[in-house]
Amino acid sequence: MSVRVLLDVDGVIANFVGWYHEIAEAVLGRYLEVSGPTHWDIGVQLGLDKAERDLVWDAICHTPAVDIKPYPESLEPVRILLSDTRVSVYFVTASLVGNPTWEYDRRAWFREQFDDEASRRLVFTDRKHVVSGDIFVDDKAESVHSWVRCNLDGLGVVWAREWNEGQELDKFRTNRWGDLLGLVRNLL
Figure (cartoon, one colour):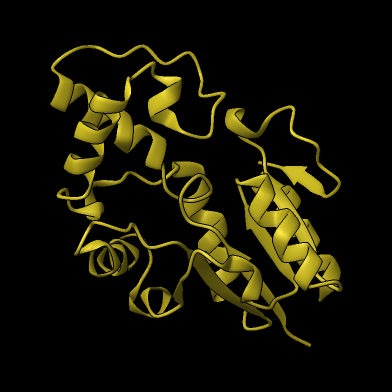
């Protein structure tokens, strides 16, 4: 038996929030304090007005995504999942509209962090609910809820982050890789 695991990238494996924060400070030329994002839109959390958020977004759309740092604790568990022949891992992530090299950069990032095979397991879509699997992991609770509604036999996992605290959650919630590996083992 094989288990198909669908992993979101940003917020689960890659630190998009940290990347955004670095770019925002460089573009705006000032220190931006982060006490822990509690809003999905990091620009709003940082207290940026619309003009500032637009400036930062323009810079993000012209910055190679290979500069995004991984969450260090995610690398080994993802490698474990990728190496298990009983597990099929796919990385379900949205394209960054406006960044013409996003998908190319993201594949290069996966080759650097993992290997060429992992880079071929990327599924780019902002309609994640249409990708079928046994387990779907995302830090955006709404994406998990949509996925579960379309994949009734699947297990949705909300990857716990500051920005999704307090949201109504009726699915499994964790940010510990050991928990996720245990869920996968239980399905094998």
